[in-house]
Image (cartoon, rainbow, N blue to C red):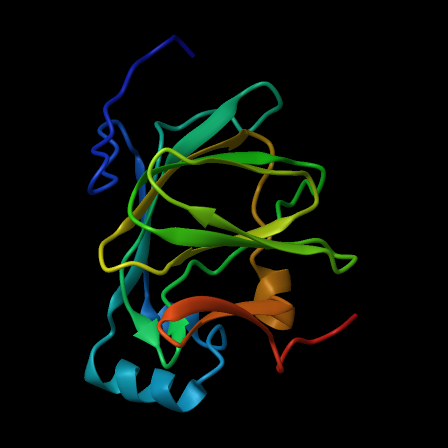
Length: 190
């Protein structure tokens, strides 16, 4: 691999040299939202685009390499819950990740297998460090796209399955017109 540069559109998240473009629609978020009735109604009306990910040019999946790209969470809600990413641990659990907020307003919901949790606000210019062993999910609480740039080790991998089965312990919902953290009544314990 040789050094290279690339451009990122800070409003749209488009990464010029991206080779991978992932689109997650509402249909791929089944079981992620608390209000299942509203989810089904919304899905019948339109399979909305919830979020997108652009990843850099193909890199070796090995230690020493840094995968990077952009994540775009579109505005919207399912009931009182905001549009969000599926969320994941890394397959190599002892892996950290860095996010830099380029556009919009949101939060990163995070938790450890042992039950620690945190919800950190994301606004223009904020750099967020996600420590090793923390699952994380981006949540858009604003009226425009939430765009972040991310970097993580090339050998980290993604574990979406744990979150799909267990969910997050905490949810971010709109209460009284503002984002509020609540316990997830459907969280599946150990």
